[in-house]
Length: 151
Image (cartoon, rainbow, N blue to C red):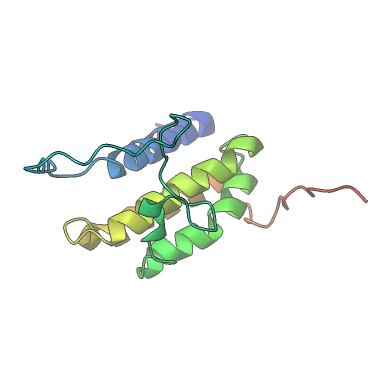
């Protein structure tokens, strides 16, 4: 019994999205603090303060993330993510960068969680296998990134 390439691609995309969605949910419930957090300060104009961002535009929660997961399979997957997803045509070009950032943040955050980290290598290997299947033998460099400026 043979499945069509489109059905296989759709199944892989759904599996990838499920994995990415599951990665955003903690495995245990967070404890509520005994004391409520202090209220946000307001300026003289009455506007509420917002979380400060680092110089690279990340919020403070992202600033604590490392540059790499420290897991070879995940770091390899992230390093080829943009080129391979572009070559496979899985996402529309204007969504690719935001999807990469979401995947990167999830993997970096999960690499810091001692309960999730032991399973992370297999998860990244599974994501990489799905991506290779979606490429149907094409090279990740087959479709170069579009130029952002014209001559």
